[in-house]
Amino acid sequence: MKDNLETLKLDRRGKHIVVVTLNRPQVANAINSRMMDELAYLWTTLINDVAELRCVVLTGAGERAFSAGADLKEREGITVEEWQRQHRILERAVLAMVEFTVPIIAAVNGAAYGGGFELALLSDFIYAARSARFALPEVTRGIIPGAGGTQNLSRVAGINRAKEIILTGRPFDAEEALCWGIVNRVCKDTQLLDDAIATADQIASNAPIAVQQARIAMETTRMDKFQNAYIAEMKAYDVTIETADRTEGIRAFNEKRTAKFQGL
Image 1 (cartoon, rainbow, N blue to C red):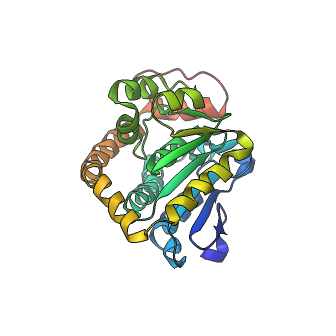
Image 2: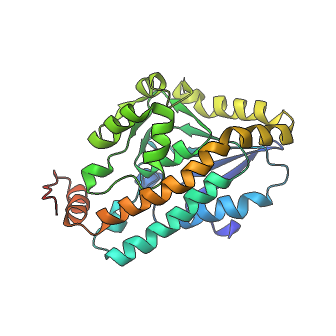
């Protein structure tokens, strides 16, 4: 499959670093079924073939977006069963990324909305371009975050801030993300990838076993809690899939109009 990747691009940077690029710039790197499948494959199989890998930088193609989130055009009109089947692929990708043993730095260029923002939150930490914008707008589409967002945003920003962000669906900028502890650094747009790679290089220069064990020690408690919490998130997410509001939210988004939710 390595030679058949359609939605991801892998670039080796030196001996120990790989840059993974979400590569659908024509649709703001929206996450379709193919990308979900390739992400699951990436974290479980493909990346293990990279000898002496010590750090990964995750970014998006182009200047417009890191990722605009799920490809809602692909999702319009599909059945509940088809939606659930598709989402199970994403769930596998999420859990594989959580269990991945090499540090991941997200370099967020442009918009990181919905599932795109959740991918960044699954990384070890985030660097953002000054032009970056973030949002979890799922409730405006009749669903909820379904890639760990309800858990990971609360962890980095605090429960009250996370509630405000998730329950309003309102976008915010890179400086706000820095202030709220969501990103570690705001970079010039032209310097973002270089800054992320420089930090990756510093991590990669350290003793790899020590880095891995330090990361495991820091992640142990969160990992144990995340597994159970993600099951709860998925149960809550599944409830929204069967609602008329979910159908209306996706249709309204694709028709570029305000959704009329009925609570059904």
